[in-house]
Amino acid sequence: MIETSLIGFSRGEQTNSSFYAVNPVSGSDLEVQYGSSSGKEVERACELAHLATQPLASLSGAAKANFLRSVADRLDASIEELIETMTMETGLPEGRVRGETGRTSGQLRMFAKLLDEGSWVDARIDRAIPDRVPVPKPDLRTMLRPVGPVAVFCASNFPLAFSVAGGDTASAWAAGCPVIVKAHHAHPGTALIVGKLVVESVREHKLPEGTFSLIFGSGQTIGQSIVKNTHLKAVGFTGSRQGGRALYDLASSRSEPIPVFAEMSSINPIFLLPEFEEARMEEIAEGLFSSATMGVGQFCTNPGVVFYPDNEVGASFRSLFVKKMNTFGLAPMLHKRIYESYISGINQISQQNGVEELFRSDSYSDEDSSYAGPCVLNTDMNCFLKNPLLSEEIFGPFTLLVSYADSDELFKVILGLDGQLTGSLFGPESSLTKHNKILDLLETKVGRVLFNQFPTGVEVCPSIVHGGPYPATTDSRSTSVGTAAILRFARPICYQGFPDTMLPPELREANPLGINRTES
Image (cartoon, rainbow, N blue to C red; front, top):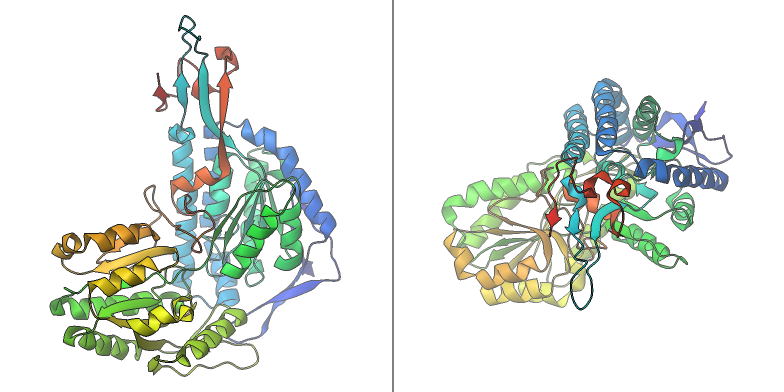
């Protein structure tokens, strides 16, 4: 039997192109075979999404919230099935599956709560002044409305939270957009479990068939055909810089360009300020070790580069951190391609002039399985500033330590940094005032700045920002986590001179929904 795509309420046809998921622990193919969609099926999914656009846009916030909660409930009820399949496809432990399931259902309910309250539409009302001179003022009312069909590309490192019913999809549904999901080749079974329960919820709530489709196939062929489709209005992506930039360029070259919200690469620099305290050395070294090796370093917020003072305290910290990294054993990476990229990256950087290898664990890989261990390299600020390769992301349990002489060097390196998801400062509170110029500059380079905390473990809440200047993302005004993620898939529409009964409820004079509005 070959499992096929979900095209609305129908299953895709079997084609000559198919693939298997691979168990990264054993390196063996899993039993189920998955068929790639045809171009005809992609066209059908996009057409269904187009037909669903107006019905979904007309749904009340309460109706959308009920749908999101239904998906969340079904997801939680499928935990045992998810554990069985996801652990085999990814090598991730049961605890991670349970935690990520809770995060995914939690963010669906978070958006449902946002819809219940309703003020996210940013309603703005300017009432008419017909006797204003010299020109009468018309009645103007504005609110956010859905952009239309959205394509979501599943991430390899979050098979649930950044995948079929993850944050991109949840925020697009909350905005009132149909969603076409491109499944990731590494965990198709996990995607199908979630996809089927989504279809059940779509049917239960009598939403249009095109509310959701799940597509299997190659990103370079099927993914491109989705983005090229004229019905598509926006794209959500989490993955590599190469993949995100390819989609962005493709979407920009369309006769009707569309936005691509791609979360891509980040080294998430950590800065141990000159006043870094010896008394906190053990605590911070342990925290850095945990953050750098969490999930075998396969998080987009993994701290890849640490700048430390070139003095006795800094040297002691370096030795302590290396000692801790030496305790981390081999662990399977999510799939072969990530493993090969990790090994290639550390091989390339370790061969650069001025780079010293402090510790590198043996790795193991037979024909298919991919076990990797940590690597710690060291260099100084002079070498780092001269070699752009040293500031590139290496996805895995890798840390580059960079010594610096003074705060002027820190300012100089931040000035030259690419955009990042996060930047972390460590030191006593008094150091923030002393180095306020460093903080001010760092704010221009990152989406989230942290003080005495590590960037891994992204809190899902309204105030979080998971984004940043390019190349961390393709749009620094956006976030892919938190309630503000909904803004990516909505656009403002102004109603001028309309009778009150023909306005959306959010803009009517009586404010029947009781939402917060800007009025004059």
